[in-house]
Length: 104
Image (cartoon, rainbow, N blue to C red; front, side, top):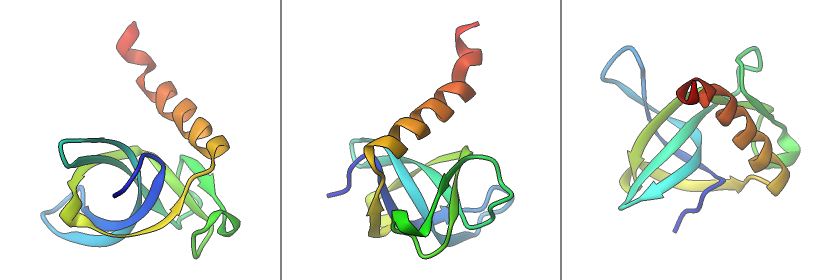
């Protein structure tokens, strides 16, 4: 089974079309077989939370905190690594920052 904080290789939808691509994503939440994930990119110019090769990915990468979507277990190909407790806390802070407008 997959857990919150797992970085998985998964089927990711493009935002501007109906096509999909196999890309890494971080599991943020799971409920009834649906996984809410944040996309991961190796484009280090993107905004988000950084991940290094030392943290288990093939390339230095960015967790894109502005690219959140839902997939099912069928869309997950395999687990790549697990975020450390420190990195999960950093991701939580970044995501919370984006959602602060909900409480205004």
